[in-house]
Length: 388
Image 1 (tube, helix red, strand yellow):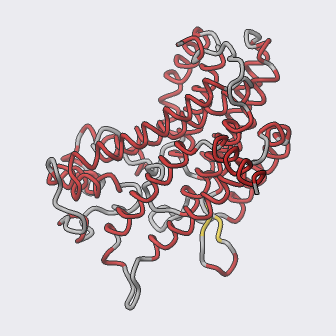
Image 2 (tube, rainbow, N blue to C red; image 1 turned 120 degrees about the vertical axis):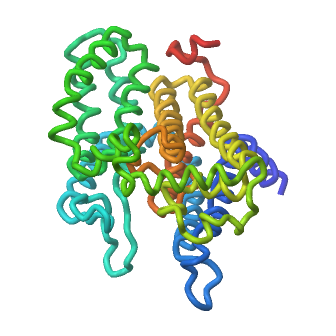
């Protein structure tokens, strides 16, 4: 009995309970807001909507995965990086072959239908986690050669493979997140700044080609609508109604389940990409600040785990995970505030969706594994460590 008590105490002590608490708190907050945003879609004799049920199930499975993965030594996980990379590429090719898109984008292929269940899975959400692992290991293998143009070129190829496959599938939003993860991990690895300047110059030079050959007419109109909103009233409808909903919330909001815009489905996708508008309308500025505070706490906690890690590869994985969450938060809220065009980026832990909510916990499980098996060890000399 004494041994069992000691085991339980040591297990609890080695578990990153604070990170897990912040994540579960964010998910509960998100489930509550999705429930509010989907009141009109609740079926007869049902208590909650299908979107809410899916989110609850995804979070429950995700938390279970996170806890299980946290007990697996990250060294075993990182040693599997070639297999992880192969599975990720296979998933992306699979979605290109048999994938389906949302009703408004039938030309896109972003989801896989899971047999006869009627459920959908978005492979790019899982591939983000796989990319963070494989790219972190790739950098670790060549970290003494980061000044070599050849090895930097290979790292760029590694980064472009998932981003390119996602672009081909029609999901430019996820591709942007991949690129931000790629840049963030290279920066934290200590790649010289002149290479980022060269890359930025190259991207700027390619903007005309990207505009004419990669963007669809709808995507172009979303950008132009930010500059000339009066010319594109239909394109800007979602964002205009969204910013009106947020403004109507004031400091304390209209009250949960009482938002005029949310409860009448005036803001399209208010349970998904535009969930922040629901928070702003019904819980006001205070609710928005609380949601942001939880997301910032999660991001900072992940960076702290990376900061304390002895293993350089896993430090980079933590920074990549933090970059993924932070970039999606900034882009999503920017869309809701009409700063950025709508590009289909969910708000982590808050937006409805099974794939995104489950897969992010797989990434959290990796961070918890790093915390458990790499505590109180010597620091390494990456950029974030230099901030000490």
